Length: 212
Image 1 (cartoon, rainbow, N blue to C red):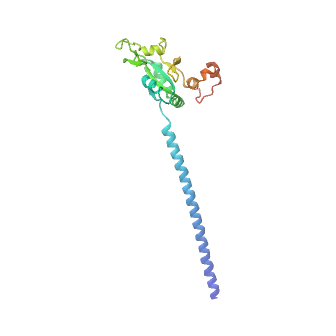
Image 2 (image 1 turned 120 degrees about the vertical axis):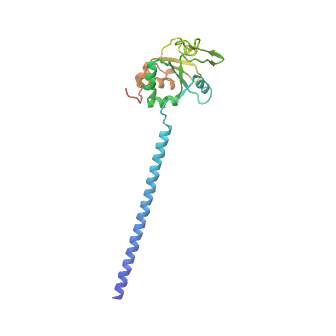
Image 3 (image 1 turned 90 degrees about the vertical axis):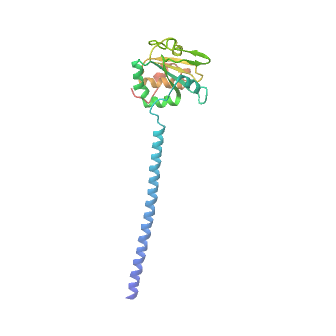
C-alpha cells in the first residue's frame, strides 16, 4: 500500500513537470510569435511612414533663375516652364487640376526643374550676361522680355516651355491640358523620346497611370 501511494505521488509529480514543460514551451513559442508579429507591424508602419514622407503633395516650383542655376549643377534635368499671368483663368484651372494630380506631381518633381514664370513680372533678370526687363512694369498687361523670348513672341496663356539639360529650348505647348493628356507629354520630353519617334507615334503607344 505504501509503495502504491509513492507511485501515485511520483506519477502526479511527473505529470505536473510535463505540464509545466509543455506550458513553458507554449509560452516561449507564443512569445516568439508575438515578437515576430510586432517586428512585422513595426516594419509595415516604418515603411508606410517613409512612403508618406517621400510622397510629395505638390509640385516643387522654382523661379526661372533658380532652375537655370540648378541645371548648371548636379543632377541635370530638363526644365519645365509654366508661363502664366495673374488674370488667366485657364492658368488657375491648370493649377487646380492637372498640376494637382498625384502622378503628375511625382513625375514632374523627379524629372524636371519646374518653373512658375509670371509673363508680366515687374523685376529684371540677367541671363548669360544679358538683361531682360519688363519695358512698362507699371502698365497694364505689359509682357516681360524673358516671356517673349521663351514663347517666341506668341503670347498665349498658359503655355509650357520645355528646355533641355543645357537649358536650350525644345518646344512650347500652349493651352490648358487635362492630366491624362499631359502625362504623355511629360514623358515624351523627359525620356528623350522626341529624338526617337514622332509625337503622334509615341502618343498612340503610350500607356500611362492616369485614366481619362
